[in-house]
Length: 100
Image 1 (cartoon, rainbow, N blue to C red):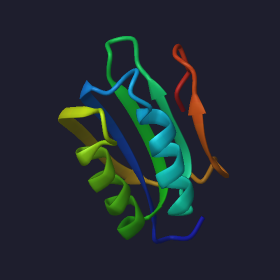
Image 2 (image 1 turned 90 degrees about the vertical axis):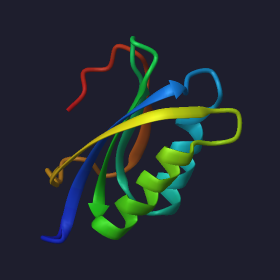
Image 3 (image 1 turned 90 degrees about the horizontal axis):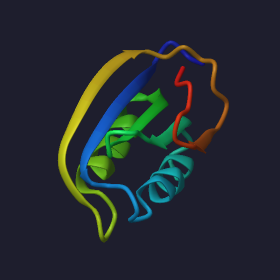
Image 4 (image 1 turned 180 degrees about the horizontal axis):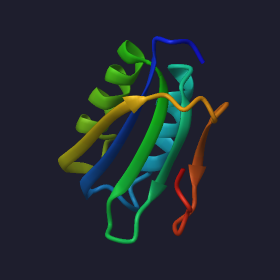
């Protein structure tokens, strides 16, 4: 972790489950070299927690707001924080995950 790294915690609402959203986020976050995870939530939303340089996180956030083909994004709630530096790669978590 470098001092310039931050944490993006985003909850995406809309038609975001059952459309390949998590796996497209995994692909995009991996392409950007970010660490973190994405998971379906019980309320029908998708939560994404990612760490890395702010400009790469902004690119991921733009992707989350647009969504992949077949998805409909109605709302994205975003929280920014300092990176914890505890994650080494980006993964897909199953429902009922413990979070961080």
